[in-house]
Length: 475
Image 1 (cartoon, rainbow, N blue to C red):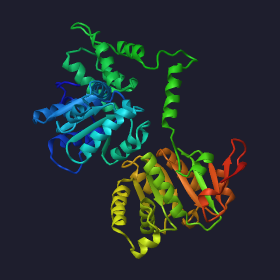
Image 2 (cartoon, rainbow, N blue to C red; image 1 turned 45 degrees about the vertical axis):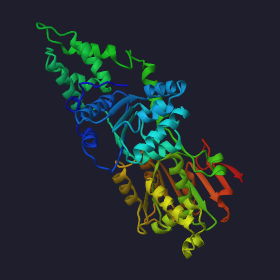
Image 3 (tube, rainbow, N blue to C red; image 1 turned 90 degrees about the vertical axis):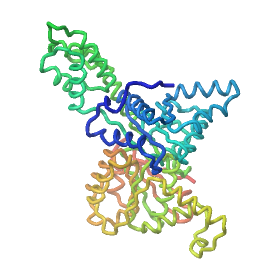
Image 4 (cartoon, rainbow, N blue to C red; image 1 turned 120 degrees about the horizontal axis):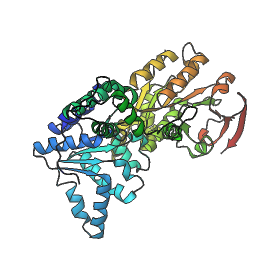
């Protein structure tokens, strides 16, 4: 458990990119607003999440709030001891009724620890009900918090989510100047620009560099630019490199970034996922509708599966079905109540309760609907650009490309690239069109209207010549 520290909001350095995150943290402690009781903050290692957590703790204690700041590993160890000593109830009481505010650091360390996750879920549910406030820090956004129970991810998706970003060049300069000046370090004027220009890393790495750099200072000698470059070279995470060679640390880092950036979201239709292996970043997945099937409803079924099972955000452009109809169909799928009963309002008291739960559940999902009949591909790109900062978009659905005005296959490829850049995949439906097929990553031909999810021809692009496919039929 972390004790009270001298860290506070005043000594937390941030620029405009993190200004909102810091302000929300201040308000979260200072106000009694019930708009949200759970705060989820993600960010890479070394960006100051623990520092920010300590600042929140300091502020809470100044307001005489009952507050605990604990790392996930400490939480796990304490829970294990509670189980061994048969005092699990005391453990739960300590982290629920005994607190006004709980701060948990490094939630990613809870991955694959099912027993501890159950205990955390109890605390999360307690906080989500407004009984106390909870701040959670992790190194990844919720959509990339793998190895966690779906029930936890679902609850966290309903929290207020913030992200700490890497320091900008100006922020590195401001922090470096503050650190060196406060310690009366004598240095040449060009050193600050050397630090911000050549050093790229997180705040923990930067602090380690500045500490070593300060050792070279004396009242008679200023730290030179050459010394600064030498220290940077010695502490570089990529190590020294020689002409004609690249350090394997650099390429390993690039590889890991690519691996970590990949995701594979299953459609939730087992027979389909067995062959296309879900939807991956940057893919253009095309369904060829030869059965006059309502692709809007079919895509809505896949959408619900994806958001429930993976907690992702989805943009849905529907040109064949209205947003109202799609929403009604989503309610039908969520409740299991036959559409005839819903239309005729032939509902039991149990049906009404199911409907209320369904509306609450669907309202928590990050699904963005657009049913503009006059939609153009350029307009879709603009809409996606506008919402990219508000959600971690993973999949974009367009249920009928044939209805898009001024359809142009160069624009489709451009839109697919836009989705990839934003971190997602593009899933579309069209009639049989060879030019679309030649550019798609995965093509699924629907041949039968009834039980369409059980009978497909899957044509998956080979790695060879464009337009060549491997054909698989499955049931």
